[in-house]
Image (tube, rainbow, N blue to C red; front, side, top):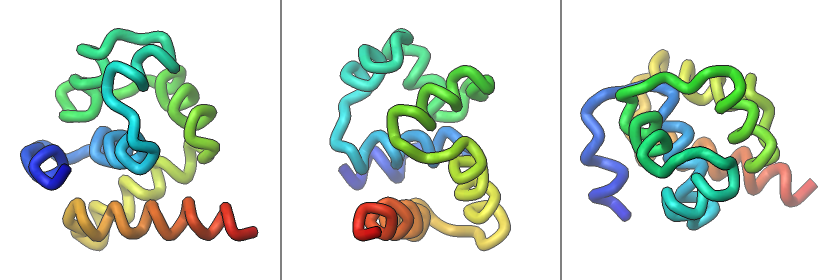
Length: 102
């Protein structure tokens, strides 16, 4: 799992989307099937080669029960605070676990 997280050099919202997928232990193929897009498109988004449009963000939002604004918040926080992937993952997990315990 570590090599999957670290190998991406570009930064963007795709990092957050990839980490959300990994927190649910979904493969790219499984996610693509659930949100009805090609695995190649998921890969391009998660490696920040393409930016997700609002419709795609909405699909992630619905699947992961997280507002689009929260997804974008994590991306902005990563940029402002210069989070590495491990710290970003920790912040996402805190949010997800916090909501489950409520």
